[in-house]
Image 1 (cartoon, helix red, strand yellow):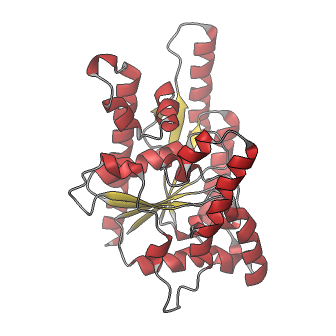
Image 2 (cartoon, helix red, strand yellow; image 1 turned 135 degrees about the vertical axis):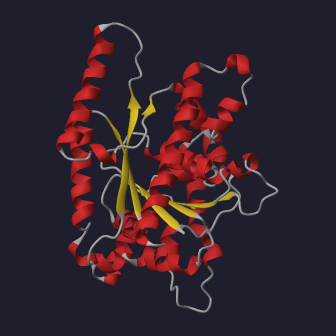
Image 3 (spheres, helix red, strand yellow; image 1 turned 180 degrees about the horizontal axis):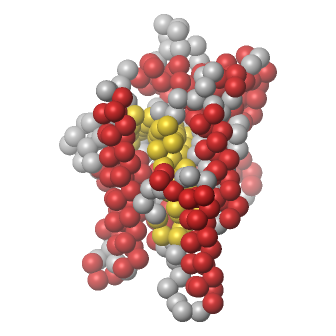
Amino acid sequence: MRTIAIHTSKGGVGKTTLSVNLAYEIARLGNKVLIIDLDDQGNSSLYLGVNQADDLDKAKTLDEFNRILEEFKNRKEIIDFISADIYSKNFQYKDYIQERSPFNNYLNSSASNIRIDVIPSSYRTTEEIDRLTSRVGRMGNVAMLLKKALKKFDNEYDYVILDTSPNITPATLNGLYAARYLIIPTQLEYFSVYGVSSVVREIERGVHEEMGGQQARVLGIVPMMTEPLRGRGKASASKIKINNFAKQLLERAQLGTKLLPEIKRTKSFSDASEKRLPLRVFVEQKSESKRTNSEKEAVEQLSNLTEEIISRIDQDESRRGN
């Protein structure tokens, strides 16, 4: 079971979009994938259609919106999975999994091993994990709870994608410690790249000293929203210059070899997420004549990225003798 955390120290770089679309691309290649949403904003859960997104969209007042959120108290989600007594005879990991993501409607339904399941998150994650931390006592103990719980899956999934918060919260630490591999999405801008260097240093020396070291390998850095402008004006030239400067910063920090295939900026990503569709499906639902070159390119980029990620994991496991 290959566990991959998607983490960045800066919000707004397309982390959730990458997590969800990567999960879909991996699943369509013949894999059973579990997404664990560790971000209290629950964006992956919303995108995957397991957080009552349709009802929230239709809410006309704040009271209606809050009533829907209150319903999350009656379901099991990631905070309950982390805090459960996994050694109890009554513990059943399947109780925490949502299997009804609409994404599965677009996969090969005749193959039971090709699907995407979700352990969702919501506002409850931060509220209740703080109480859990105070009860357990040591941050290191709390951070290892997910890693221990995942052992109960007994290779039920081929891949587990952990979508983390940009902030180093107890929930984020659970994801980083449970993961065997780490992918860092970033924009090629100065502050974003600087943040990447900080994250890599923290991961490679151990996210938290109390955790006894971090086993995750930094699989690669995904440049996001790159080179979107095709004009000849100063704005286009300036953007390309910033991208090139950011790449040089990564090289100086000896992170250039960790670069994964880039994802260029395109409106199709936001359009697909608004309709809660995998990008590939969003594009393929259009007639051939209405598909733009940038949309076709975006699908190809996701495919190339997925293949490279799987290839790097294959190589790593071969070296480790797995």
